[in-house]
Image 1 (cartoon, rainbow, N blue to C red):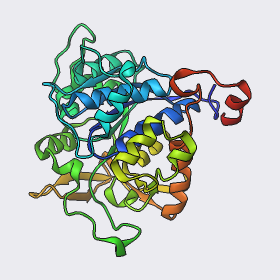
Image 2 (image 1 turned 45 degrees about the vertical axis):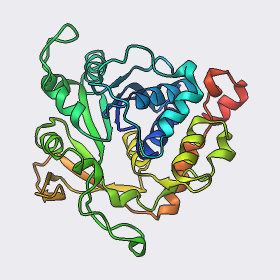
Image 3 (image 1 turned 90 degrees about the vertical axis):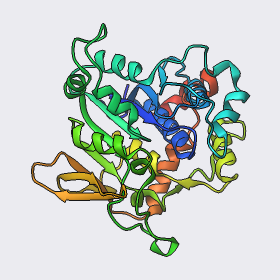
Length: 331
């Protein structure tokens, strides 16, 4: 049962879960939204190649009681780790939930999820790089679907919500300037350019400036406990009680339609890259792109996002069922 009385939005999450901890926070928020009946997580694609990232996604899914969610990873698989190494840490702490011997290719996971979805229903949430999504477009028809990747996306995907680019000024310019080239756009600019030019569905962008000053995760140890893999990831990455900007978390919230009245959208246009992987915006009535514009202060957004990030799993950690009264209170 949803708390709004309608069908949950099917989402596919594409993440670079190994470096910045907001990817882990975004997966946690997605599970909190699923607990409320607002989204259904069809699958997770890891768009980096380190196997610890695959393990970490599986640990988070299991923590929230959804071990069955398929997780794919970009091949060929490597031993790559992020600089703070939280993905390896939470994987080693929970080997029962970590990576199996076989780690499916992310593109295959994406194809299978889309093939099984109803037409025009899926929201793709991209909070990392674009290699998997571009590779998906290039896939031929197969046993899963008679449609090519491009045809499959056009048929099944209602929209994509992308954390990437820079479209304006941050809320606190006294804390520093916006980057000339945002990381998700600049990491593999060839793939980014292809995604921007070729992705067939409408795309809503969450720019760097929208969440740079929206700090969340400071209270995770208090709300979920020090043994929560989400709290551990944040502590290892940023320090206990420090928190982190909410770029990827904001994208997931917007994919669920949860920030109406707090975040507005630009008019239509087209996003492209300049020679340095900076963001170019061209307004156009026929454009398929929009970008988010915050209309409230960062503290307002932080409070709402933190309420989801800090929520313990509805079914209890690792699937231990809670009392019905607690379930009703959260719903």
